[in-house]
Image 1 (cartoon, helix red, strand yellow):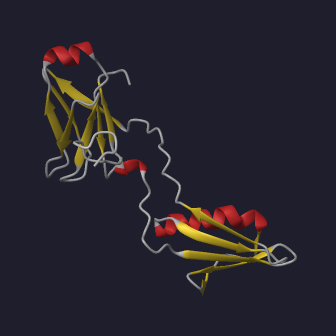
Image 2 (cartoon, one colour):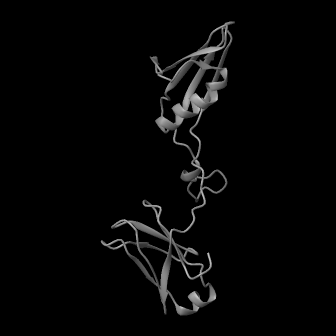
Image 3 (tube, helix red, strand yellow):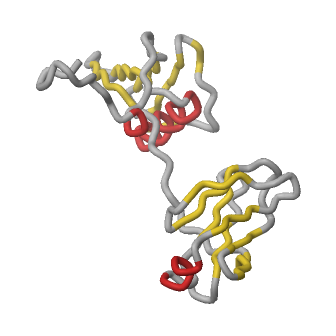
Length: 172
């Protein structure tokens, strides 16, 4: 229920939120006088390659949060007995631009691409529709000829699991 309008339900955008467990994993970091780190995860030693220093702290905490796929509580204890507590969430995956692997074929009112996984959901952009690939890995979509003429070369197929990208027409 929303506080602004009692009739509308309260919603959050789940895709932008990190799911935090009720009890977060605990990462404890002890820093010695020379700046070397001893790291434990839920009271068990965290195995890391080589000796860890202060410069490695951000990377190691990011790796732990990414490996667990959830936020972690971090307690850092310095040699002088001072402490610091924080929450570290896993980084969001970065989007990468993908160059089309092959060109899709077009005919009057139809665009087709191949190389997808059997049963894979294929995203079609300028997002007109989502299509599921057939058992032989082919995705077909019937579109109005006027739409294809108005946007030549701008229809894109992308396999969600395989990463296969195909662009219709000559321009990409």
